Image 1: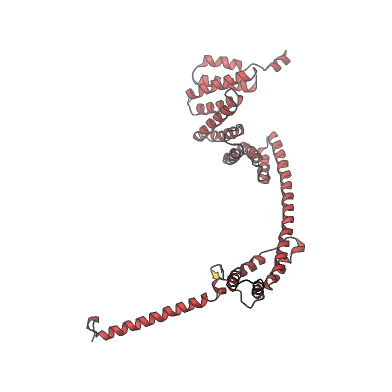
Image 2: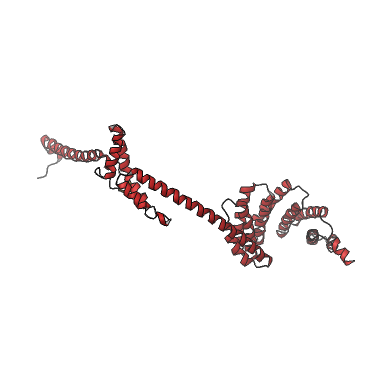
Amino acid sequence: MELSFAEMPPWIGIAIAALVAGVVGAFVGSVISKRRSNDDDPLRRHAPLMHGRPEEPIAQETPAFKRLQELLEARGVSAKEQDTRLREFAGEYATLQRRLSDIHPVGESRKTLADDAMDALENGEFEKAIKITEKLGADESAEGFDLRERAKKLLGVSAISRIVAADLYMVLMAPENARELYQHAVEELPVEAEERRAEVLNKLGTACYQCDDHDAAVRAFTKGLRLLEKTLGNDHPDVATSLNNLAMIHYAMGRYELAEPLYRRALMIDERVLGHDHPGVATDLNNLALLHKKQGNLDAAEPLLKRALSIKERNFDPGHPSLVTGLKNYASLLRALGRDEEAVAYEERATTLPPSRTVDAA
């Protein structure tokens, strides 16, 4: 026969409740007891964790622990402070051992010093361990700084040598050879030589461009630009040159929307720093005008080329290569605009020889 809870006598419910309470109480008591036993052991409670597992705590009978206790007592440290110090040492002991085991001296005469320091630590010879590790650090440091200085000089000489060789390769029109040398030089220059590294990065970008690796050229020019902005500031003619270089690559790749803001920024920098009548400004105007022409925006290109030509006329003698280029560019645009008669006059001027060559011909 089955009984429902409602049909059970009251004393049975009371007995069940008492039984449950007793079981729960015993379980909780055992947990608290274990926790207290662990808390009462300062070495276990303060043992550090390694890789998710507790380190083996240092035993109180080990020479290192006993020696530290003796030292603390000899110094008149209170019992409470002793307890704190011993707890801290217990937590650090395994870490100290691990760090000593990670030391691998480079100098031949110092190969065994880390082992000697470990022995001193485990024997509680703290002053000896300190002297060994201090000397080891000082000796390795001195040798390390000497090596670093030597390495810096070696790499510096290597970088300059590679740059010279690469420059000569560029003169001989062998950019594929220059490219690798420039790349090595970029990596070998000292960390603090950021302006020089930017210069080499721009050379690397040019070599990559001449190798038809436009993506690599963009990366090199961009890195060079960032370094120049960092070292020289945002308003420097070298920054403008770097902007023009990067814009040229985007122009060659047909990325006109990326090239235009770079050309415009270069123009603003040069106008502000060099002056509105400087030949560098004429170059910027010419670059921006040719971009507009490439995009089919002839009306926007015409005043830019005209202004560029005007600057060149004031700065260069007749027959100067830059002035000749300006005349030809403007004449070409005039023909594209259907103004052939005007173009003829500029084309004729572009054939004028420079004064020195005119004298020689006479």
